[in-house]
Length: 401
Image 1: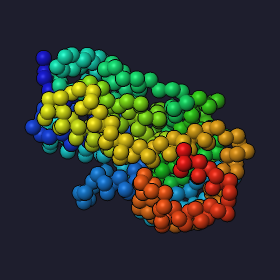
Image 2 (image 1 turned 45 degrees about the horizontal axis):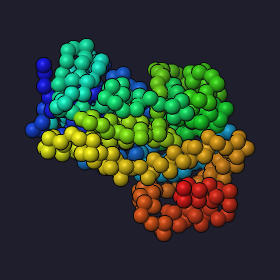
Image 3 (image 1 turned 180 degrees about the vertical axis):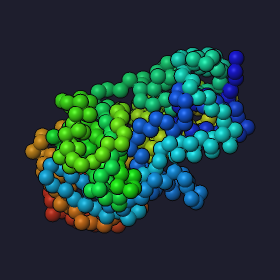
């Protein structure tokens, strides 16, 4: 039996970043079902500049594909363009994941490709992971195995996703001269993406990740059919380079830890509830999983109480933002189309032509954790909202729920 201190299921950003945060004195195995790290790419590839600065201090990062500074939001025939100079970038996910893998390997982790986890059994003093390439044993497991974590379920956690918390997605990589390499586009028109949105994220050189996510419970047509119709209307001359489907689950698991197991990234359902973006929270949860692994391994204590440190760290870090977005998502799903029309008309009118720095946005969001009396962006925003009582009412409901 091959024995390790930690077995990580899944060689995506959450699992790889977790490995990089585990001390090199511990023996770590990463199990990845595919035959190459970073492939196939099933991702829109966008991250915020805040994420880049938080997790990557190095210069000349090899995975940066393109940077953008403008956001256009569409709803039916209306639209608003916001300038956010420090907002974000697109990464090359294949290069990004390989970069994370190299860091994990340098830290001493072993990676086994083409290895599918078939079962996991909790024993008194270890976990046995059964795969198509044999059985492995570890003191603990970090499950970073994607949507509806199979290994998390096998180790006693409730990972089944409700239909209303699932987005069905389809994406093209397109090439088109109309693409603005400095602008990302979100379209929330219910005609195309009920309960979700259409996106166009510029990759540079007039190419884009162009896709949509539809609330699975509200879906009336297959995502590929809807995206094809949207393309014919807005990008009729676009050349399709690649196409793929997938799904994203939101609404975090009620418990992301168990005895000798932690769940990270998409497996923990820590995708952004509004946009479905998952890279940022994959890195956040993966980092905390690695840190907690160091603690429990050092103390040789894998009890539920000790493992719960992970849940506390994750919630303290980003739960406030996710909770508010979940509340907004729920409110929007309960709105009639007339109410949605009014909501987007007010919102787009408020932000169109504005210039906002994302650093102000993040500082405002996190300051709300401790005090209602904020300054800067929130103060100016509420001042503008006084002119629109409908939108102000929605914002107040979010802040005081």
